[in-house]
Length: 429
Image (cartoon, rainbow, N blue to C red; front, side, top):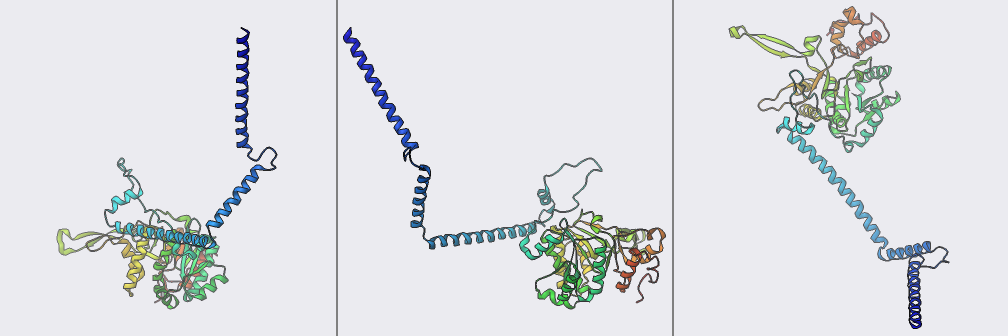
């Protein structure tokens, strides 16, 4: 029995020793992992990092020479430039694709572009699309103009007028009344250096295009109609940059802010040359041909033309197409009048051999956006209409523009009730 107890005690003691050794080994391994530099190292972690960093730098310096680094940087720049060029090419191809597809199943593709197909609602509730989506702005077209428009435009809109030295006096009356009306978002596109200096001296926002031989020769010496035709080429860049433009001739007096009176539901919103409700907004004109007997009467639709010297145009594809069509025809047909071409392209329907423009249009209120025929033939003679204050008055029907512009200011701004009386309804010649 005693022998058995002694053997059992020795066995238990040996087991305890083995466990103690095993624990010691495990603790040693743990401390070796977490404290590789010992308990008394001042900054083992930092030292380790310094060693690692030193090794890394040594490796880099040995592997990457300065020439190699320069080559890598040059490759990065080259790849970035190629990437930008490829993006530009993709954008241009997309634009060409959109233009090419306009004539192919246009209605269906417009539905796909604007949203899913819709069910027809109850009778009398269906409304079609009033306008087209705006284009994606492209600042690469003219970075200098883009920067200027950011400073001048308000809510991506502005008044734009073209001017050379031939209209300097009228231009001064034009911008003086714009300032009086509190309008801030306007810009003069100067067609010669003299107008640039004149605008700057009067604190008027001004922009002069980069030299262009095709435009500059007309811009410097051209008359009223010749200069007017240039605007269709110049306005294109404004629309490509994503801005809506209220194009204005300089023979216009501003009495209110026109942007407070626009609908913005069409591609083109224009004042009319019409002088009453029928001529301004359209009417059923019955043509009488007695030789036809029973069928002697033929119904036609007539409307006075839009005035190409005052219209609001939104940055849409149909709007830009309109500018391109008019500018193209004016370059091919030098004796054409820009206003006639403008209206022909805007209103002519598609027919065999001709694809019409798919642009939405709106006629402005003829008493708010008033032409000089309405003013001198009707308004000044009617006591009730004389009390109305128009937004603008366009002296487009009369050649003595400056004198009539000054009279309009006297009547509407300074309150001189007889200021309009000396003038005839029409012109003296």
